[in-house]
Image (tube, rainbow, N blue to C red; front, side):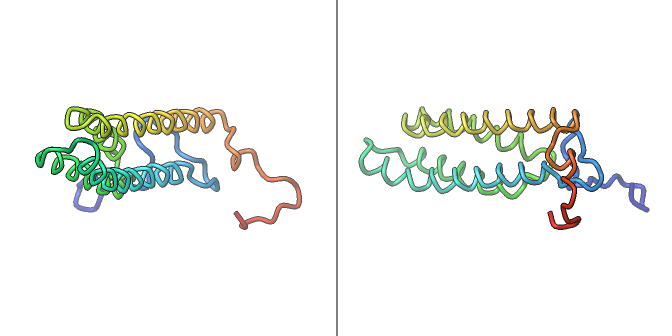
Length: 154
């Protein structure tokens, strides 16, 4: 709580229910958030580059469908910048579902959404594995360094 009595959210903390890294250990959640943000940025680029191809060679996309996919793509870029927020992952997953539903606009867009959904399923698997390893003390940084390893050079 702040001096005014308001609750202040610490954005550097992992999401609720996830273990916190011990003192002196690099934060694995920071790296995973970076992977999620990079995946969203890659999706943004992929969908925007696919639209002209689908428009020209894939039987076309309606103007409304074009605007919907562009809007969702821009939201992916926004989602890349909010991955440190507690709701960032939910926002990204909702966008994945919306992109799969874009199969009604054009099947190739829905297929690309499904491919990226598989990537997100793997990211969620990694997230679960990291949390498990943190609870068991099995992360690389938690195991310590071999004798003679210089301190502070991580």
